[in-house]
Length: 387
Image (cartoon, rainbow, N blue to C red; front, side, top):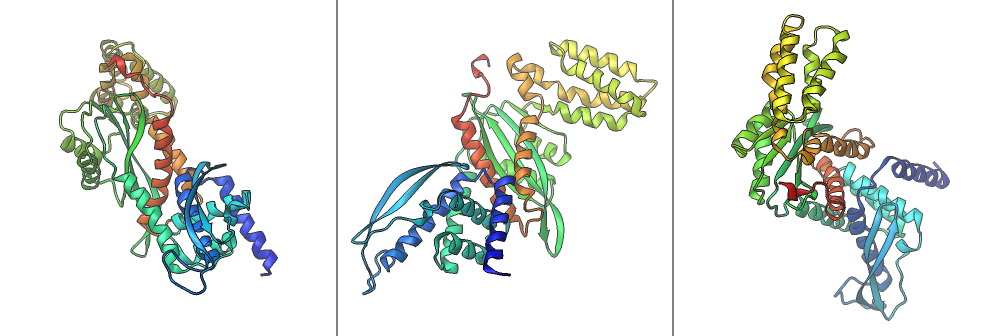
């Protein structure tokens, strides 16, 4: 492959990533970009900080803050300053190409489990520097430290808790397995949303859900007044153990999907779905229970298994009627978390297969951290004064 072919291939990969995602990683890019500029200053000075050498051409002189508006969002950078030698980071001179190259470097770090060789190649392309494995590992360590600090940050009173899990392909023990990604969203007393935490595990067994929920409590989560989730048995058992007595709202969307398994004829599905919507859209719980009783009776002969299932399971989706009317529509399903899972998938689909669990956790954490910060500084999700 010629040098031009290598450049074309590099640009093609960069363009692919630019089109497919990784736009939720502004903070990770800030960290990597700041590290790249520090390396460039060392090269310009001919010496590392505090290093005594005859090759030194000047001295470090602190940092100057600089905000860069990129397609990733606002990047708050710390530009290294020098004394005794003229220096300006080429990272800030290459514009769009630098941004795309940085995006690729971050993608390689996260998706490939911090591939030192890959990151070294891209840092060379970006900065014109040959960096060592130690330097690459240090930059990666800083990224991981940022994400770990976010995942373990203190929590506080959170009236509403929404839980869900999704799966990604991961290599484990020489095989490809499905790895569960746990996500918890909270709505605070001020009505703002935030991603409370995330974790990865090889299954949704009770022990893994209990560990995840226990970690939220250890970080200070309290004051939960309602939990919204699907009816996965592992989550159900862990929820009861960790939050005894807290009302549970079973996701109405998942309930409607589950009901279709008990419909004996495809032609009946639309009618059953309409009857369930009538129950869920009732103005109050009494009317919802009345409509449910009518539906149970309606299908008692034509679809007895469905009738029995509805009588037993649908009441778990009516807990939301105890909340203020203005809160019900946003807290009767896990749709908010489902939409967030789609955003995660938009980023992870480029990877297809993760080499290990830490690699998956890095990428998911980066996306969720960025989303959570947007939520916390954005519009109020619920008006809580009605509670």
